[in-house]
Length: 357
Image 1 (cartoon, rainbow, N blue to C red):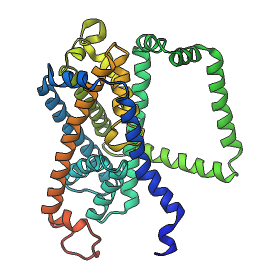
Image 2: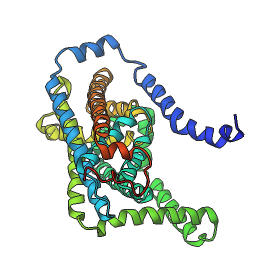
Image 3: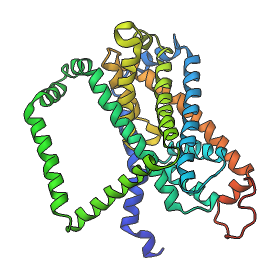
């Protein structure tokens, strides 16, 4: 075995990319089930659940993936890359299916698939995907800000039940905290402005500037209004699929009453918490997403067993759907001559490259 294959940096990279997310998934799932009465949870899942609402949520989730493919198409067309829409849809389906096994690998795969399929520069396709994710990050931040405006009383009332939560609320109410936060921001800005010659700051500045340029392209590109509409459609589908699932369970259906905006506010709280939870790398969101949903529902009095049953059933439905979409993607790539050829590097003059365009 060569020394190169035992490169510690390479081994460390594999550990961080593959083993760490798996370990996080196992630990968070163990934490989630630490106090759950499985008999109680199974009773909730097997009695009084209207599975038609779960199926409807699965269908809305498919629609969100199609909208994401349509949005990415706008970015790729701005770069002169125009793959068939079905290929783009399958690249999105495959991304989420692959993320069930290897977190974050799906994004790399979809860029590689489209770049090879269309004989396009990988860096350009990757840049469009990064801009795509930046748009999602901005959306989550805006939704988080909205939640803390409309649901602050409920969140505070929940947090003060616990010593750590009470400490967090007291800290946020303390003006010294906000003065310190503003001071840190000013000092950080000054360091970046005055220390531009220092290599770590220079590299970080270039990275931030390039990220901003990638996002700014969205504002200037042709079809920007369609891009914004599809962004709203994607996140609207995400929200609606969770809201629809509320009607599958009696305890979440009880939250759909006038004083809680017919369940729209509790759903928004759980939705934003779960979106933030997806930032933690894990297999298909298992663990972080579930805990975030449980926490969000607990703000409105849903018990841990009920929240666990809700999150596991919703996650299981989405996982089954992603597995089916992954199988569909494999079939599409297999039967599509161009898709099959694009799976391997081809000579530039290969006449089969644009066979199905």
